[in-house]
Length: 132
Image (cartoon, rainbow, N blue to C red):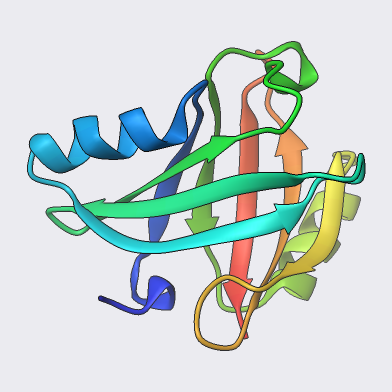
């Protein structure tokens, strides 16, 4: 398994059956890097899996309520690895771009990661992430 912090970007896709989706992508040659269970806030867990393929990283996640989140499609966001999340926050503030989510810390990678999410002009979600 490769440390998640070595990947510069990833694409997050909400799936309705995480196990079936993992098997599908493994069948295409992807490698399972890690899996997580995160509290959903409703007494159950959301499930997340990271798979790699030719240096790219795919995040598959199944929400406990199995509803697409935030009225967006199954491809929810793309992420960009940054060295300094606070610098990004300053730039966003200067440009009057609202932060939709975060900064928030999650247990992904060896020491965790922090991220924040913004929305582009066509409602695409853009995540800036920094591994701790």
